[in-house]
Amino acid sequence: MRLANPLYALITLCLLAGMLESALAAQAKVSAVRTWAGPEHTRLVLDLDRPVSHDIFLLENPHRLVLDVPNARSTGSMPKPAEFGDTISRLRSGVRNGRDLRLVLDLTAEVKPRSFVLPPQDGQGHRLVVDLLPRRRATVPAPVAVPVAVAVPRRVPAPTGGELVIAIDAGHGGKDPGAIGKGGTREKDVTLAIARQLAVLLAREPNMRPLLIREGDYFVTLRGRTIKAREAQADLFVSIHADAIPHGNAAGASVYVLSTSGASNEAARWLAARENAADLVGGVTLEDRDPVIQTVLLDLFQSSTIDASFELGEAVLQRLGPLGGLHKVSVQQAGFAVLKSPDIPSILVETAFISNRREEQRLRDPGHQRRIAAAILEGIRSYATNRRPDVMLAARP
Ligand SMILES: [Zn+2]
Image (cartoon, rainbow, N blue to C red; front, side):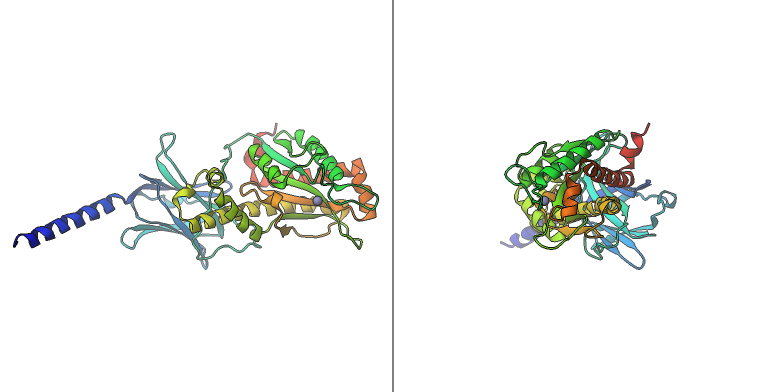
């Protein structure tokens, strides 16, 4: 069998060549890298011949963003410096591990990246989009030198026009009266009254539409509240409550957003329900990723929603302060279940202390209820003008 060995070697070679060829063929081609500087963020787009996975991480001193696309190579054009906008000062591309594409963006400021992949549509092919959002709030540390990938909201906002759906959640209801004041005032009645006032005010706004989560004195589960908001594709969720402590004379308003530990648990829970996870992140196919990456994605996704919630919370808190004083001067974080929608910025407003006799009186007063509602509306308006100028400006006469 003298022929056997050379033949075997030949077959092996052919097999290897075949494997090499198919491996190379599987390499994604980036036909163009484009940048676009918009009023709110700078966008980087990679035009691709197939879907890819990717990793993003940030570096400091100077600020840089590194985008790694495994098993991909650039075959086309890079953007010209004139197209960089104010945020990107330089863009370099290179090959890593012989077959991965790496893009390094030198930045003029710290950014918050948001990335997603888009399937072919409207004559465009596969795309990987990275948005560089200005980082406004310093209280949540940026993930430094840790791969991040943030998913997009399920509902991509229309470029102009439309209206914002504001879910108003009157706390408690039905068999759950909430806290009860010394004068017998029930929290569930006060929250519903304020929620209704807020709905009236919001309905007058040309670019907003109120959605009352609870319209009467009946019980709704916490989960049921977030589901109703999601089904109506709410843009914001505002839960209205009145605070209470058994002893002492605490007074003033507080605003809560979801705590990150609460978010992590929720991310895990969402993942358990795969149909929800699939529905949750339109641009990204979570199914293709391993569970650890999925959890990281959802965590980061939720943390970007929490960032927005903070912004809304701060705007509302600012307006509530002059009205009746603040119990907590900064936005608080807690694991309230009702705040756990991963893609809807959500706040919980403790309007005042129902356990405080003076505040209980004011909470019963329709005039004061309306002033609280007006303060919340002002906060929503300020947030929306900042975050959604597309909607807010388009609807102006
Ligand atoms: Zn409550």
